[in-house]
Each structure stands twice: as C-alpha cells, then as structure tokens.
Length: 214
Length: 214
Image (cartoon, rainbow over all chains, first blue to last red; front, side, top):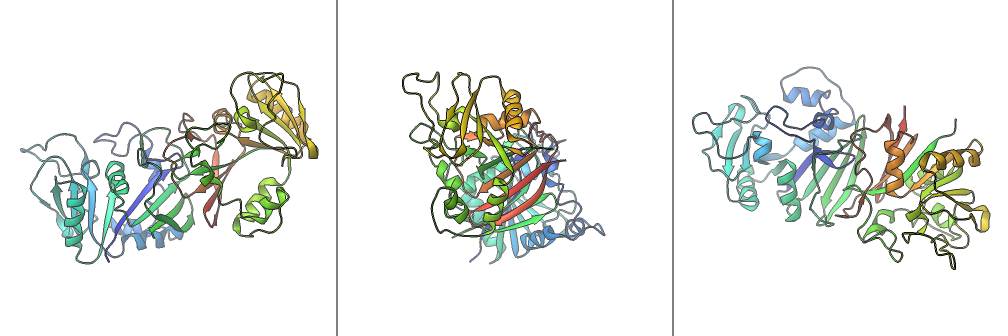
C-alpha cells in the first residue's frame, strides 16, 4: 500500500521557516539553520552533482527518505513563491533550477491554474487547483505503487496532517531557535491522527524523529 | 562551578503546559501527556515512596537530573497556583503535599511576599520577590557548591533563558501535540545563549535532548 510521507526540518521552537520569507530568501531569516545538518552529507552532495562529503547517522535517514518515492506533492511557496497569478509572459519556473533533484512527477498545489512544466532529468511539475485530496490522488497514480513524498511547506503539510492523510512523518529537529516564522503545527490541534514515534536517530546537529501511522 | 540546570517536558509543538491551567488542573488540558513517560519509572516511583516500576533509558537521565542538586528555583504557578496575594488566614501550601520530593531549599518566585514554609523531609519553601537574579543568588548560596535546579514553569524558565543564565537545559520531548497552552520558547527569540545539544537519549514515549552552555 503506497503511503504519503512527510519529511521536514523544524527548529526546537517549532518553526519550519523563519520570518520574512521572500523570493530572495525562501526559508526566511535564519531558516537556513534548519538545514545545516544536510549540506555536508555525501548523499545530499551527490543529489546535487557534487563529490565528497560526510557520512554519518543522518546519511541512512536521508537515503531511506529518498527511497521508494514515485511522486512528490508540494505547495506553491515551496515550488517557488511569488503570490498571486502566474506571469503568462515569463512564468516563474521555481527555484529548483534546470535539473531539479526530484526525477519524478511533482504536483504543486496552487490556486492558479497553469500548464505543466517539464524539466530535465525526468522531473515534471503539474499544477493542481483542486485541493489536497485531488493532488494526492494524482500523485498516487503517478507514483505507480511507490510512495508519495510530501515536501512541504508548512501550510500544505498542515493541511494533510489535519486531514489525517499523512502515513509517515519524519521531523529533522534542529537544536536551534528561530523565534518567529512559520510553525509546522500551528492550528493543527492536539491530534496526530495515529502517528506514533517509532524511531529516533541522533546525528550531529540534528535529531531525526520518525512517526508512522498505526 | 555550580550551575543552573533546567529540565522540562515539552510537546512536539512546543508546549510545556496545556490550555486552561487551574488549581484543579495544574498542567492544563492534556498537559499530563507530557509526563506519561516518567510515571512508570522505578526511579520516579521511589521518589514518591512507591515500589516497583520500569527501568529503561530514561532512568539514567532522571537519576542524572536529580544528582548533585542542592536547591531548586521555581515559579509561583509551579509551587501551586492561585494568582494574587496569599490568603493570610489559610495560606496555600502548594500541591507538593506534606513531604515534597525536593528535600532541599526551594525558592519560589512571586510578586507577593510571604514567610518561609517548612515541610517534612528537609524541604523549605522560601518566597522571593526580588526577581530571577536574586532568587538564583539565594539558591546558589543555599546549594553550597552543588547545582541549582530550575524546575519551571514556562514563564520562569523563559526569564532565565532570555537572561542567558541557564547552564544546562534538558528537554524531555514528548511525541504528542497539545495544540495550545503555554509554549516554552514563546518570546525567547532566536538565541540559545550558547546552549548546545550535547546528548540525545531515546526512550519509550520520550526523547531527552540535553543542551549545555559552551
């Protein structure tokens, strides 16, 4: 049974992005601190065409997170975010570059319809205006039996969490404070919809908390 | 050098107490879920005069947390909380019972002066109106070279964190959501004042994150 798997990095005070997110600063002020643990990893560098790097306890977590994923769902802001309708003259292509690191179909939740965007390396971006269940349905079909990655950001992650549609949640807890910004669990309430902590992996600069729906 | 050591249980969404705290429900709605990991432990049961119980990875964490503590600082709400001046006719004795589990001097931060309260088993409660530095100073003297425990609640913990006075912070992260209530890091900003993650201990129902000021 294919599953919807969320993985997201969060600060000790619960933020997944810092304040004042913008096209220039997509993670908000200080948001990059949430991801410092991943950049030195060999597995991350290889994904981005770079050699070398470290191998530590996080490596296996990242490898497992990438394994058996057939499609991705993400929010408009994560695709690359200016608000409002797309510019028809020069439509924004997101900040994933010419060769995005997905290599599979990606479904972008948006209020503004748009033709699909085909990138190099097997990544296609489809724009879904029908809401989270429609996007999940499309992604599940596209994944052909493999799992679907829920890439974020916070707003979309929250919608799937509240709907009880997340089968696996991996939180990369960064031991740092952002103080303000976007909270992962804001408005989610007190219900994890059966997600239970099944594994904790300790690594330099991060604690990986893996929840699975039972 | 004696240190100020905070240990506190926090939900995945950052709350250390649930909503609607009251004399009847000091931890707020759902707040007890933050502490479920501790009640089955043999070390916790022994502290409260009970036999039996479990021994798991949390046991050593609790033992270490209790070791070498010579005094405790806590907030008025943690002592036992009705707001406003003390009732002189029948002053509230807190909810720690006749034989509180401290067995050393406890300094309660309050806006309302009051005579010290002597309990069984070596616990004395002194009421400090001079603010967090005065309380810390008194506690350090009373501890005679041993460390001082910062027992909470959130408001007092935040004040010491913001002032950069916490030397060790152990967060018992409960894999649950409270949805609302009192956040440990609300208003603390983005500065941990040199507190760095040095140890993560995984146990059933809790992840212990230990930060030390470097």
